[in-house]
Image (cartoon, rainbow, N blue to C red):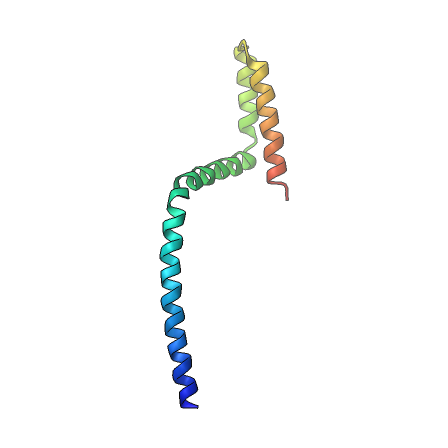
Length: 92
């Protein structure tokens, strides 16, 4: 029984060493993706905020109607497409 426990302890030590090495390699491989993932995270946070505060879209629409921008039709179309995409992405 003692030999079995010694073998298990050695195996555990070996596995913990292997896990530590794998974590280092994983951290090195993920480092180049850190900046793009932060950008995506900020975008998702912004979309969630806008989902909780839909009055922002109403305000933007009223501003567009008030100022009667020359290309407001294109911006409204883009906003509508973005709104629809956001709804599909975060649909529960």
